[in-house]
Amino acid sequence: MSTVAVLGLGAMGLPMAHVLTADHTVRGYDPTPARREAATGLSAVCTSAREAAQDAEVVLLAVRNAAQLDDALWGEDGVAGVLAGDGVVLLTSTVGIEAVRATAERLVAAGLKLVDAPVSGGPVRAGHGDLLITVGADDEAYGAAEPLLQAMASTLIRVGPRPGDGQAMKTVNQLLCGVHIAAAAEALALAGSLGLDQALALETLQAGAAASFMLGDRGPRMLQAGDEGGAEVRSRLDIFVKDMGIVNTAARRAGLATPVAAAAEQLYLIGQARGLAAADDSSVITLLAPAAVD
Image 1: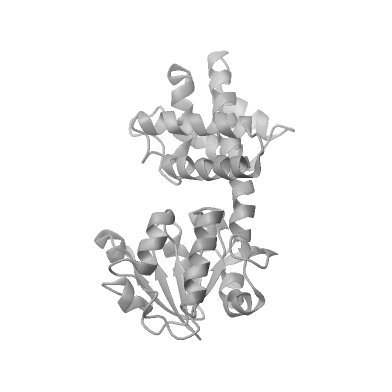
Image 2: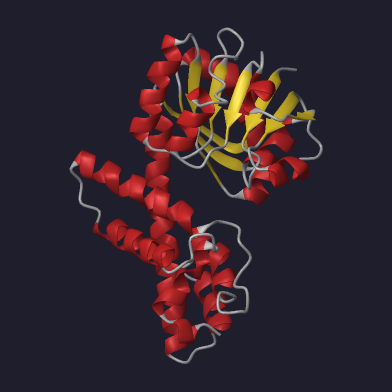
């Protein structure tokens, strides 16, 4: 058994932490008191990130963005200075290629290793160890983290030897996810505008060539988006504001036009501007045809 500190006990961090408790000592921390209170079943829930990371062999980071990554490692409660010698930072978040490569350089200078391992699949799959994880790491770092990665993933793919390679693959993944959600919203909004029963339309679409994971997963929640209180929040809209920003920034740096991804990003930005940042991302359907949502 190794000692693992999980920093970030939100929708993804907490179920990943629970999966790891089967074979490891897991100390958790989140800056939000309510999340710490909800984190039952771990070996320990600590009152600071440094307490959780003290002498841990691995620190798993489940943060929202590059700013939180930087703060978790080098901020006021940053953990880079308290990790065990030759320790491993296992980053499971989507924060962008350049941010990860810059972070890796700083960690290497401090004698630490970074495993770039963004996850995909959502909270339910995270709780079952059923995630897709794409990894960028050298042989030594990957070997140290592989037992944890195997526990969390049903599909584990090492896409390259450098931190940032995992982010690159996740960026491609998020392009499709963001576009598929936007396309699903357009399709169901159109069905409603044409007078069709949207639930029946969703069932029909999922039976044919137009089916997709995002249509099947987000579609039912899109049909609830017009209800009082909206759909259950399983994936916040502002996550795709961040992720589609990463996608289009990466494409511009590569000199590649991504007109469909750019259009999808604008839809999420409009949703954020209209107060939907903390709503489920399925709520984008209400921006297209509010009256068409049953």
